[in-house]
Image (cartoon, rainbow, N blue to C red):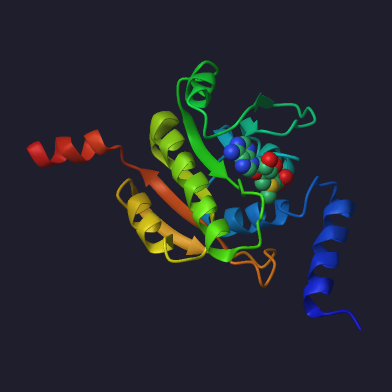
Length: 204
Ligand SMILES: C[S@@+](CC[C@H](N)C(=O)[O-])C[C@H]1O[C@@H](n2cnc3c(N)ncnc32)[C@H](O)[C@@H]1O
C-alpha cells in the first residue's frame, strides 16, 4: 500500500503532466497566487531559481512576463528572458537592470543541493533567500511584491523580521503541494517600501 506522501507526490506529478506543467512546483505558486494575488496581468516578474520553468509557466498564464535566473539552462518560453548564472554573483543585478529599469514582483523558489544535514541545508537556504532579498531591494518597484522559499529552522524568524522591515504585509505560507516532511515555507511579502521611503517619512 502506498504511503500518503507517495500518493500526494503521484497526484501532483500526474496533474503537472496532464496540465502541461514542467514541474510539480507550479502548484505551489498557483496556491500562493490564489491566496495572496501577488502577480497581476502585465506585471514583469523576476523569477530566481527558475529551472525547469514550472513557475514561469504559471507567470505566463497570468499574462505577466518574466526574467528567469538559474544556474541551469531553461528551455525557451515565450515572454521569458533567461539569465543563466548564479544568483549569488554580483553581476546578476546588473544583468536584470540591463533588461528592465524595475520589476513588479520578485519570486524565488531557489533551493540548495540537499546535503541531508538539516542545519546546513537550512543555513544554505536562508543564505539564498538573503541574496534574493538583496536582489529584490535593487530591482523591485516601490509597492511591489516578493515571494521567497526558505527551509524552516532557527534562522527563520530573524530572516522574516528582515523581510518585514521592507514590506507592509508579510506572511509565511505552506502550500498543500509541498511535501509533508519538507520544512519548506514560502514568505509572501507585499507592498515593498524601500528604506529611503522610511527615512523620508521619519524626517517629515
Ligand atoms: C526547486 S527548483 C525550482 C523549480 C522552479 N520553481 C519550477 O517551478 O520549475 C530550485 C532551483 O534553484 C536553482 N538554484 C539553486 N541555487 C542557485 C543559485 N545559487 N543560483 C541560481 N540558481 C540556483 C537550482 O538550479 C534549481 O533549478
